[in-house]
Length: 264
Image (cartoon, rainbow, N blue to C red; front, side, top):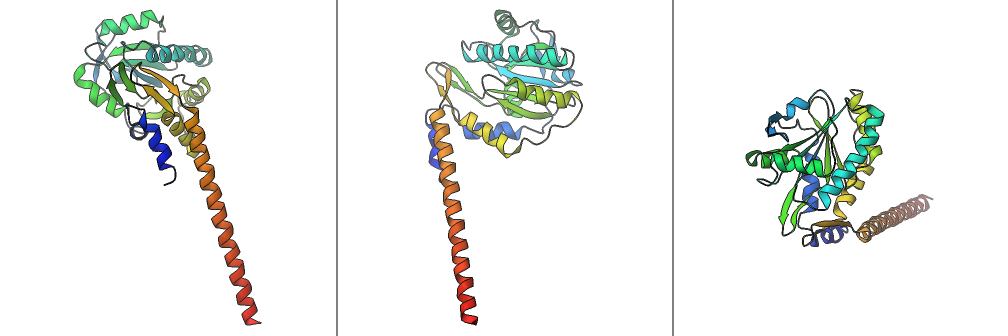
């Protein structure tokens, strides 16, 4: 494949295999979310099934993250402000789950929420006991890898419908309000989400592959140059395909003319 070198280049500086991470993330769509017992900020047991009956947004964080998780949480909070103004706070719920144990204790999750001034009644911060972290993250399609600076992980928010099915993954360090809003409007109305489509899948793929992680600092940056390379590769493939199609048509016309001349 002509795009293989470009996709391979996206993995060179990454700790996490982003192609595999995207595949695992998308494979979670359609699953019923698992129902382990987690702990809220006061150490009380909470089952994820307690959030059924309303659409649910699920994000995974670790409290020892000094840049990415705080930034994505604040961005999600800004999105929540707009979404609650549109739908009201009783129409959907949000949970942020700490996956780094034993560091992400209920006390640590409580401190993280307080530090970033998250106090929305429909947003809970939960601590996942060590024994359930692996199966929980696997079922949500959330991939992560330890690094010297913390964790390289997929930047995703999982959308869960009122019946507890994972129906969409939204990627990026700043979840788009319009994307979340359109999906929530459908879910709040009790309607199934339509398929994402080829364009949406391509955008997700480029967004993940072009997110470059620095394992020394624990930060991310978007490599737009790689996106341009991929776009250039796709353009080249399209040009070659059109050229071959035109050549095939020309040869077909030539054979047709030769056949008519022979009959004459």
